[in-house]
Figure 1 (cartoon, rainbow, N blue to C red):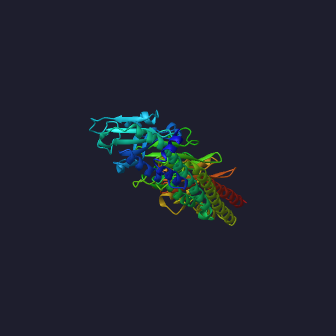
Figure 2: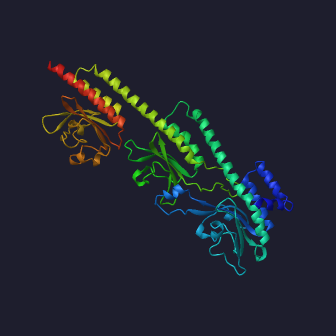
Figure 3: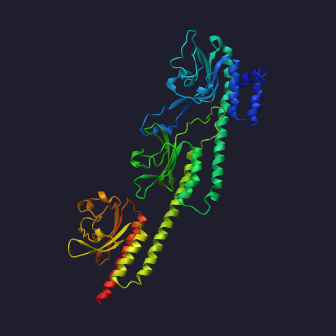
Length: 507
């Protein structure tokens, strides 16, 4: 039907064939549709002509929203193209569906007619800005495009729109459907070309450096292109209890830490949206690799219009890339960068342990042993102080070495059950206290000074407990699992050699 009407209209409107030829030749669809909309407006003597699209939030986001603020409406009416009066103000406007009188047109997909000769003020539920009064209107749905419509507003001299105007809209509507789909397809292809180009350049950009910092630097321009407003990447901490910001760009500032318990139950498997207290809509995509969640990718929610239009009326050249297609690549890069850094860290730690074991074989006295142990403990886990305690017959521990020298620590004899982050000589494991001031043991009998964090490991063998090695910092510090394990091994090596020195001294 539409094709026959279109062919019948060609003799009267030769420009229609010209439009199709331009589309076939690769003309930008929305540039062409903007010209067609202006032609329709003039041909029907309308004050304003509109291309409207209803843009629902994707179903996964509406189901997985986190109630942190005002809920986002599931159906919003976007003014994709505007020609005529009020174009500058209306172009790009987005209204909630309940703010319009277009339900019959957009939802039921029926032609919409409106005329009121007495209307002198803007319609209370009409288009709310850009018109001196909504006196007449005509709209037809776009075939094959749910939620799409062509609308004419205010015919000249307060006349109603005619059946011939409606017939013209019905005939021209398929061209707008084709144009919208072509624009979406064109944009999708450009997105994929951009993505493939980025992937092609990755080896040259990363070169031989696969550190996490370098990977994040390479990914940031791509993320900015996909979501210009703001975004970033949050990765699990070592204990997998918090998500820490490792990359952030744009404004407003996003949280440094995220508690995973505040996210939806299936956030590790399904993308979702949330709205901040400031009303910013954010998308969160899980970053997964080999069945394990590394963290989340977060970005400001794009406007979801696949055909964003700038003030000039031309399509927005800044294409928002579909982040969902990038998360797999990002997770792969981040995962391998983390693995590379873990291997490099462990290599450095084991190199220090190996060198310590070599020097340990040259030690002949307890004093040399103490100096070497303290020196390598601080080298292994950079901290401010190292204290070595020996167990005595009493309930107090005796400080025998402090590096660097600190009078208060040298003269402090802690209770065996308190002061330290636990009496670690009673356990075959290290004990870290990154929050020393709030640690239960230290609250009972605090260590002297203003120490913020501590890490204690036992100096013991299977046969004998010698004491404890304690590292202290004056600023808050987290201890990684690799550091804790390495210090524990250092203490074990040291305790074995101390036992060897004792057996030689006894003989």
